[in-house]
Length: 216
Image 1: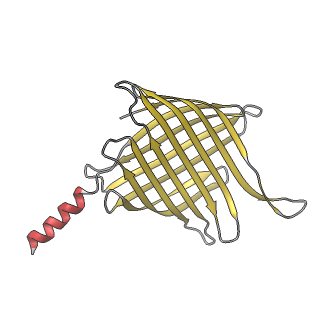
Image 2: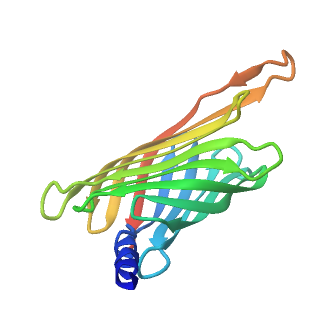
């Protein structure tokens, strides 16, 4: 019986190996400039606990005193290489919000496809819900050159309305750990018009070029 229990534990631990992504990026859009850092890595050697942090700061060219920060940071306990439970929080210029989430993760054997999605609930008296995710695909084109693409997205909502969404799209090439190309960041907030008292949603794109360095 003890041997069977030990085999089950080892089988569980063998399925918790996690992918690692660490990068720093600068992005210059037609409206705003942005600096971004992402850290997604296992904390222990078996990958049972992992850490995920996306941080970016955006500055408007017309008003450099206005900085728009976003930080999404969670620690995840992984049941296997696909599913885990996470807790942490996110911060915007409106403050910090604690959260709990499920981590749904996938990466292929080639190492050129990575997906991590976090269905999230805010740990507040009147919680909002969020779907946050990251998708990276960078297959080889030649021995030294790769295609690079990434989609980062988040949608925050409750049972009455959509609150806020953003999407980041990156398309380009990768060479020796550097990625470069075109990109577009889109923010979609919903707010109540003070005159009509009706909910309104705006679409705010920021298209430009990016340069990124990936660290192993």
